[in-house]
Each structure stands twice: as C-alpha cells, then as structure tokens.
Length: 173
Image (cartoon, rainbow, N blue to C red; front, side):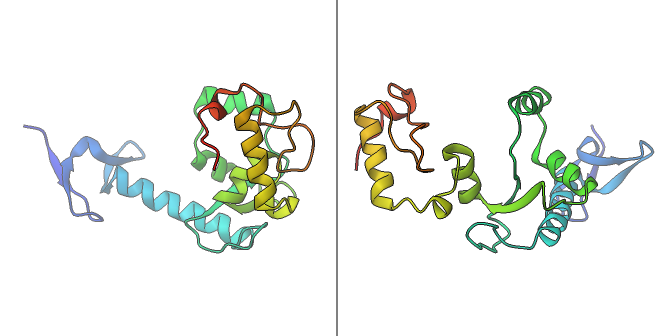
C-alpha cells in the first residue's frame, strides 16, 4: 500500500507523490495542484498590479479576462523556440516579473483584445472597423470572393486567405 497525505488546502487525501517537493528534502503540506494554483494566482496578481490593472485597449478590469501581452509580439524564431520548449504562460509571467514588467515591452490586454491583435493584426477597438464591415469581410472570405479582402486592421493584406481550410466550413450569417 502506498503512503498518502492530506492536503491542507483542498482537504483531499492523495498519494505522497502528488505533493510538492520542497528543496528535495521534504514534501510540502499542500498538494502539487493546489501549490500550482497558488503560484499562478501570486504571479498574476503581481503582473496585474504592475501593469495597471485593466486592459490597455478596452478597459476590462475582471482579472479572469486579463492576460500578459508582448507589445511588439514575438518573432517567428522566438515563437518556434517557445513551442519547442513547450514554454508555459507561467514562464512568460516569471520572465516579465524578472524584467520588472517594463511597460515599453509588456501590457495587459483582455483575452478578446489579445486574440484579435494576434489573429487580425489589430484589435477592432483600435481599427474602428464596424461589425457590418467585419461580417461582410467574413462572408466574402467564406464565399471566396475577390483576391484581397479587407481585414480588420483596414489593410489589403488579410488572414482570410482564399481556400483557407478554416473558412471553407464557415456558414455565412
């Protein structure tokens, strides 16, 4: 029979191997899952406090929606290295904290604004493209009309590439 221990945080009895190992000498009284949640919460609070506590684009303040954004983005080489190393969000947060959460390099964005910036080049809040224009662009891309569709940033270069598999199955609204 394996040795078990009760986590002081969640109260669950778990195998000893499920507890965080401190300095390779003794097991913490908190299971690894609870320890990880606590660590993520501490890091996120530091990031939020250091970077102003709200989305730099739309002003969202709910911490569940806020995320760290690299203002200049990551180069293709940096992205490949992160994927190869399977670097986590936690590592990015720790790096930002080590660098002092420099406001010229990092900003807080809500998940919507960060996703739009990453996939469309700019957030719709900044581009001022109307919902109707965005829907027309999606419809045109779904139907394969034209060669250069206007994307959400207002440029003629687009991520709605004709024949792109992700948009063949789009059902125009």
